[in-house]
Image (cartoon, rainbow, N blue to C red):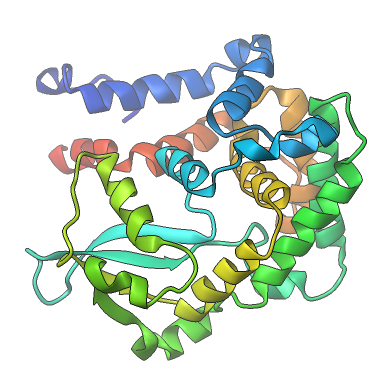
Length: 296
């Protein structure tokens, strides 16, 4: 669908044009190899507030703003720690509500953090090697990598397994935007959700329904964030952004991920570019593609 000719009546649908343009740019490996890494670094520095691990002691802590960082990451379809989406009521398809839930861990299962393994060593080496490839200042890389990993390991202790999610569905809290602050004593989810939806020109009112699952995880993760330094939080969230974008980097950077993939997935072979890019477009512009599939 991304490369075959569109029906004439769909040639001018901007969302589909954008999806195909994104796919073309993703599969254009020649352009990717010619493009310097400065494009990524410029975005990280100007839009996300920088990746401290690359800047050593020169990173400016006063520039840190967690809410702004989370909102910017949301614009690039990244839910890190805090997940949020609009869902349809099972009993009334005309009614929508907001879901707040735990997001995924980098190593997916919390058991992967229980003890030192080939996987945890490969994960830390992945962060280390990528950082070394992106900067000449290595003074704080080792310390920052350990801090990033230990932060995620601490959060993983509270991450719900699939069995827990199924067994504890009755613990889901149903509330409203106006009363959400009574559910969370730390992170300001009310303001966070209002600003997320305002990005799409949607103004939430106090009566809008919010469903909160994995509440224990969200509360504990928020406490850990509150007790952590700005440098650590900035390092972790920007790392998760970069980790999600390695597939879009030149091959010399993608190859740094191979040992991690071998430890994590059992293979270091990179998937065909067409599959990587097809998944990337579907994850980021799925609604646009759904329109085409439904039509055909």
